[in-house]
Image (tube, rainbow, N blue to C red):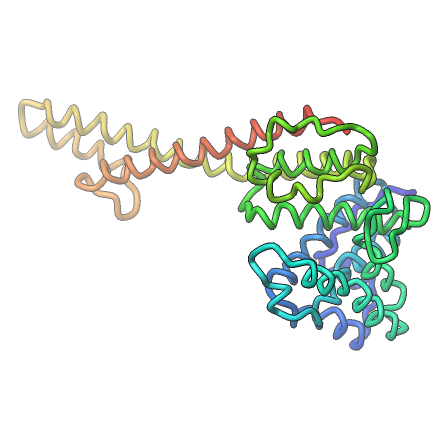
Amino acid sequence: MKNEVFDFYDKTSLKSYNLDEKMRYQLNMLDTLDVFTRKHCENVASVTCRLCEYLHCNKGFTEYCTIGAFLHDVGKLYIPAEVLQKPGKLTDEEYEIMKTHTTIGYNMLNKDPKLRPYAHFALSHHEALNGSGYPEGLTKKEIPYEIQIVTVADEFDAIVSKRQYKTHIGISDTLKILIENSQPNAKSRYKEEKKSVALSEMKDLAKMGKINPAIVRVLFKVVVDDIGYEITCRQSYVDDLKAEIDRLHEVEKYDIKREKATNEKKKNYFLEGMKLYLKGEETVDNYKQLLEEYKQAYSTRKAQVDNLYNEMKIIKKLRV
């Protein structure tokens, strides 16, 4: 398929949908979902769009998959809040209730002719290539390619969101789970990491042969690029902090010379030198405090960038 870049959230791309008022309303009905589910739908749509881009899907197919991803969990509108928002593990009965969001969503979308093409995204996004999914227990040959893409995006975001990661730091465990899910016969190669919080919480999902390994490999590329982008953004701030620290160090040098000066003329000379480097509300009295604050911020942000680089190295070593 022709490689075309498509950004779901770009206003010019949204125009290509030619959405009429009714369909816009159907998409906007997701606003009535709880905040977590709404954000999850947006994330899955975004990741799906990126996966399609890396899979060299054409724009029409990308649009199709992205809207389907956006609507995949619409059935949760009718899942009781005490089940949908339960913080702990669901009981067997509650889990059966939760599973009905697939058929509920399918029926909702299937009733509307304009949304009917996306109904199977709601129905089948929890199917697994090895037949262990629901609601129909479909196997690889029965699961459409677009559903396989959305399923990878859905599982990925569910794991990351469940761990409440604020950035991509720490998601290598998530990716290891996805790797295990893509291996139909291999035993877990990560048993030594059972103490990992992410692996512990997601152990029930670490089954073999659930998701398409080719799509998981593409997911790695998406994540590595995301980490690279995050590093760039954070590094820019780190560089700015370093520049501020260097500037205030110059102030400090003049201040040291001022204190050592033996006459008032020299003291005033070095004082004026200090003032040349000061900005905004900085003064000769508060610059040391500001310098320490900059140093602390630099140390924290630099450590975050280093963690991201390390995370990228881990991910690049992962193989499916």
